[in-house]
Amino acid sequence: MKSQREILTPQMLRYDDFDDRAETRYLPYLMYFHRADYRSATINTDRLGFRVSHGATERGSVAHPPKGPVRLLAGSSTPFGIGATGDGTTMASRLWSRYAPSVPWLNFAGRSHNSMQELLLFLMHRELVPEIDEIVVFSGLNDLALSRLPDAQRGEHGGFFNCGEYFDRMEELRASHRKARRGFGRRAAGPEDEPHVVPPLADRIAYAVDLTTRHLAALRLLAGPSGARITYVLQPLATWVRESGSPEEKAVFGELDDISNFWELYGDIATLESGRRYADALRVACEAQDVRFLDMSPVLAESVTGDDWLYVDRAHFTDHGTEITSRLLAESLGLS
Image (cartoon, rainbow, N blue to C red):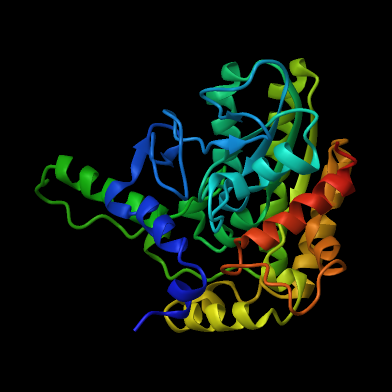
């Protein structure tokens, strides 16, 4: 018997294949990035792993940019386009082909990346896009979600997804190099051996905002010579937009909740009130750096009805959700 997810969002099976952990592409510095030269009817990437975006008459990617100035849509899996039925229905493609087509848009997003990985991605590929007109960072959720990790895993620049596996493997590697020493017992327990207590929500919001602030400052320095304008858009989690979704969302979300621990891990950050608190703190931080800021959740909430099916899961859009969001983004930022 097919699941509601398979019936309502069959394209997600292709994303399951794309994200197959057995095919994870591990890279120095970034930790991981998309599979390169991936081909399907739903998703296609270039030789570097960046997703292809579509304009009205041409296509482009970071490895194969169009001539002249470009606009970059950066961030994580939402601007990457998880949930889209094809490359032509991602946000970068809809901005390029319809809502802000005066300058080509490239998909510069990295699936499951935090703000440090987003920054490194730009640093490592900056030379491929010498003329940048605009950078829109459509992000924010991952830093907040990962803020619950232990300090030993978060480090100075934030934790990353599946970092627990990374640290476990590194400890095994270190252990393989240790030699037994007579007269010495087991190493004393360190902070990483102590039970972890998740910090209060206020502390996690402050932590995520601090990471974003520092990494935005570095992005401004890197992008400065190009004269590109930088805008930070807090991505709209489904529960930051409205408390109850469309009938299709209820069916899919309920099914996903039965097989996941979403509410146990992220219930406190998923409320409308938490989303507004996070947005308010990010707005202040962005204004201090003269970075334009937009909280997309209330903008989206004011423009949809209860029947609008926006999400394939709580973080990623349907094609309809992408279409509405792309239009509102262009209108809100005055892009043409």
